[in-house]
Length: 234
Image (cartoon, rainbow, N blue to C red; front, side):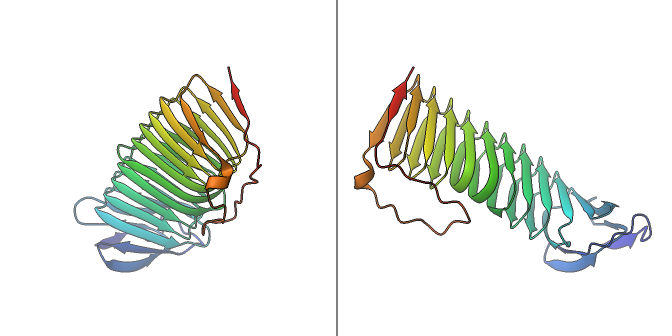
């Protein structure tokens, strides 16, 4: 791994980058790696990572990280993290996360919004204080989210969310959420939730008393569970 152009775009943010087990600090310039991958500071507090087989980026003083066409890519304790056309991706403690056309995504403890589109495998989210939007993934597994919407996934699971909207999913399993809206899902199971609105779908509703309501170890979100379950169908 060779550093070039060290004075191209200086930044007050310092990132810790781990490439194939080798750790280095980056705050300016470009790192060119064997195999054609690069790590570059492209703006103040913005790090761009492309075509690396295994990379982890930490810190950066709330700086933003962009991953493109990497194998395994992870962002820990960064600002906004975006992943485009990577293999397996992970984000923990970011301010916001965007995932597009990756094989799988594992996201935890996000203060802002999360958007995940077109994952070939599973998209897993645990703890999202802002809006969560998951679309066109093979499997979606979400928990501890304030406002979640899952659409056009083959299978979906949700636990302990505030507001949840499911649209055009194959199978869905929902437990201990606040307000739930199900639209055109083939087979859905809803248990221990508050108000449930159903439109053009098959939904099995389980009474609240049959489930424990102690919150799991998620982030900030704790939905309000209403004891009566209301089903509205159009």
